[in-house]
Length: 329
Image (cartoon, rainbow, N blue to C red; front, side):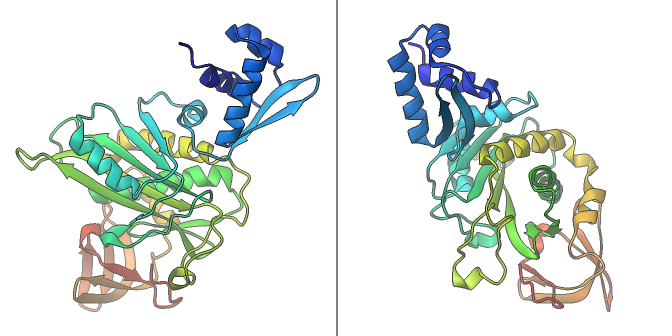
């Protein structure tokens, strides 16, 4: 049986804001005019904004909800992925991890949710994830060969992809990155990246990479403990979040195919908020003070300390502080 709702949605999306009459939709899909109307109403109830004008018909404007069909429509590359959307998850990374454990994954899976009840960042820190205002997504990527994984390069490469994506929608915003995994806007954290892996029970080798991305698009009410350091990209966004997700997917897989070359590291350095500045790095109980100098070929931070140069990999770091402005990331 044909899914008329999906067919109508596809037809509206392909018109790119132009109008199509109810009679034409009825003729195209061999259904009645009332059936067209009922399916349009169901799409509206889900969160799709569809404009109706007498004499013109229907025009698709944007979506307030995440929709896999809409995300796939806005993608411009053909890299094969499967997109899953949810109204709520505990954590997209946790869901991706469970999915990768229970199923054999042959192609990348994308998990997107409107809100997370237990969103988390590095070292189990909570990531505030309210509904309707953010993007919370994870990419589950199967590892085809027993290759060496460079998590530092995946995280830094993802940061560049996310910023590139955001810049195309919010060109007025000066986005920065704070090593290891923070995306900054207006000197506050508007996003974060969490890279994890799942391992084979047989030999302990890596089977899947999971890259979690959380973004505060126009979140305006942060809990008191993080108000001083968390912020939104803009006060009020008119951008369909599905478009941003689609752009991130496209940019990520373009990068991921050659990520081991690190060909994005110069761009990452240009976006960096710490290079040339005094920083304080915590690694467990150890604390190092120095000047952030550069990033090496694997995305590790090289800093100049009183006792010489120190190279710090992302997996070792607990916190990176910028003492001069009090940012504690």
